[in-house]
Image (cartoon, rainbow, N blue to C red; front, side, top):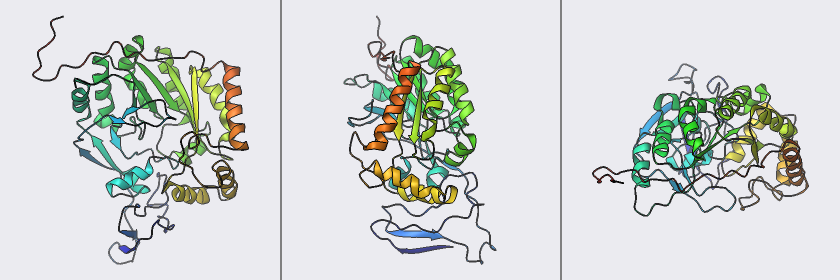
Amino acid sequence: MVAARNKSAFPAAGPLVDAERRRGRGARSNRSGRYEAEVREEFDDGWETLGELEAFKTEVRTEQARSIIATNDSPDISFDQSINPYRGCEHGCIYCYARPTHCYLGHSAGLDFETKLYAKINAAELLEKELSKRNYQPRTIALGAITDPYQPIERQYRITRSVLEVLDRANHPVGIVTKSALVVRDIDILSRMAERQLVKVALSVTTLDRHLARKMEPRATTPARRLEAIRQLSEAGIPTQVMVAPIVPALNDSEIERILEAAYEAGARDAGYVLLRLPLELKDLFREWLLTEFPDRAKRVLHILQSMHGGRDYISEFGIRQRGSGPYADQIAKRFRLALKRLGMNERGLKLRTDLFRKPNSRGEQLQLL
């Protein structure tokens, strides 16, 4: 049964979903997003379901996207255009800053985000058209800047691979961010592009503790398999980076040096990090998770986090939102910097090439003779 009530400016914490119904998921609740006129809360009234509500199952909806290259002018990220083949992400990472984007679709940032997924099945076709535009100028495209391009449904839909095929043919540079070992499936394409300095791949490694990873990222590849993916990509000649992201104070920040060492040993020669970000609905979702998984340290985690954001859960200001400020944030930055220096990472200054780009031939367009 679903009950509806008037919604306030920002929803208060609602009831948690029963553990059996959300088994293998990250979020603990599924309350309505900020754009909905009402808050809907599902509960068992003992009549229709005889005491049992259905477990949350992954649903995939295909969509015909109207455009595929998204642009941004954020000064604190290294790319200004990106492609996201999917909306929502089955990995279920509780810390994912993309969760609030699902509210634009009328869904919840909670369990809906990881169970109601959208696949942009015309992504490759649209990309080819956009690259063919007369005024298009090639700049590195980030693949997976919002949701993971190699989440489990990519095995079936293969949209990410089709996008890479277009970029490969057009000699267009791409940077990939993922936490899935599925990326090694595309080594054939990626190695060809690497020979032309057209690709780099970043694997996100949040923790080396598989038990903690299971709690934080329930359906993502295990840490060991991510490190093995780094090894395979590096051995294939593909420039590989490790992202220690997100760093959660009093939870995984003690692992910074160990993660960097393990990634270096696997072949990564570049690294970066991002502190935990809690925009919009995510701040309540993370609190719910923290209180159920780590009640003994929840207050400490939140206290330190707020100390890095001016006493608040999150500051969206450029330059601060990803790195924080204050003594604790400075300490993390210094530790990271010293570890990089000791290992000799971030020294190659890799830049992807744009001068090899060739516009795809649009349908009906005369082929070039020379």
